[in-house]
Image 1 (cartoon, rainbow, N blue to C red):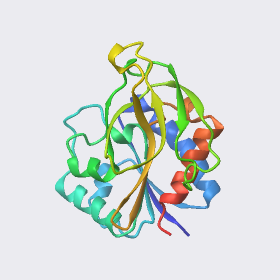
Image 2 (cartoon, helix red, strand yellow):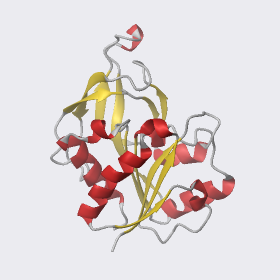
Image 3 (spheres, rainbow, N blue to C red):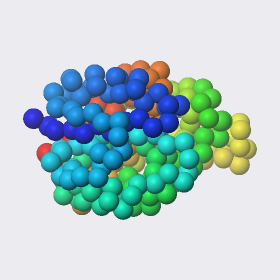
Length: 219
């Protein structure tokens, strides 16, 4: 059986407990054995026994960090083959931990329309040949449109284009929405959707998340 650690909680603005309920529905369908934790100090131990770590932790301050011990345990587990699946606020978590963001492959910079604003935008699948994105169609979201700083070596699966309505100089510019990458022997999957469960309700984003979780788990 696939052993999963699901770490969630922190800043309540991302509805981590509601999103956890939604996520549990997916992991139940996959038949995964999930240990839930709302304590970041869970990372201060050997994590190599997990096949996957799902990161639903949320921070409110850019000064929040992982300790050296937490970084070491998390990254060494991924290097040894433990997968990572994460979305939305995970790219804004532990902002002062450079090693965490290096492993994740990206960092949240801004939502030009404003925090929590239901700005409608299109998500385009640019690589439908990956196991995580196979069968996923383009879809629309009305939520925070994340502008990301990303590793150029990510394999980008989906992207969005900004309309310039709020920052005119971003008109026509794109930002990745979903990507996959390798960190040592571990697989990493991330997408930027998920401010609330309403954002995750569509069939395509649910399929992307479910397939991304399944792909990232140790095989």
